[in-house]
Image (cartoon, rainbow, N blue to C red; front, side):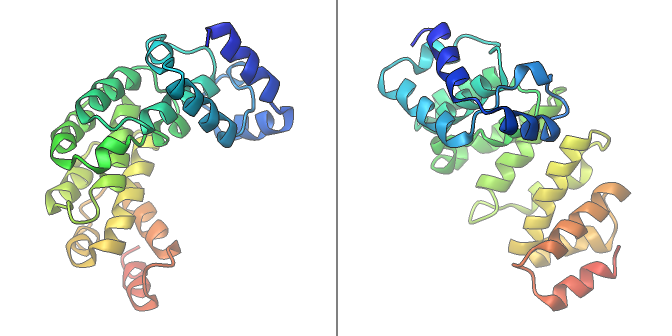
Length: 226
């Protein structure tokens, strides 16, 4: 599929009302770069590019022109099962990611199957000067390292990460709130000792208290540390 053909497909699927909705959610994206195409259509286009062998060519054409092309790229990464290839592709793409929606949509199948290959790269993303690479590091921890591959060291990565970028701090708080759900005994001391910056501390508690997966008794404990 040529770039012009893909853009024509996207334009045909665009909804002005949905564009207005997404523009409000994506203040870091120029409104002129948002078409307003819903995610199911974008996933279908990603699948079509993959099946027709056009995926690598599309992903090699960076930067993309519109937000929806970036989402198609993210969904294509989600279909990748080779860990080495996925890591290289994610690194290349993160240089061009400038909003939370695209960042959070990057979920390669390979990462859920090859944790040992991904773990060292998470530290690299967190140390990147790029805010959305940092955010992606926490998204990766959240998606792939809260189960059997959880390590208490990851909590310290979140606690000690420099604060100040809203979208990075939101991801830190999100990760820590879910760590409280799955690893209460490991996560609570960070809150009790107030090892986080004040904003992330409050936001992590808020998100944990909002969770239906935490008992009322534990929510009461968290509220006492606000």
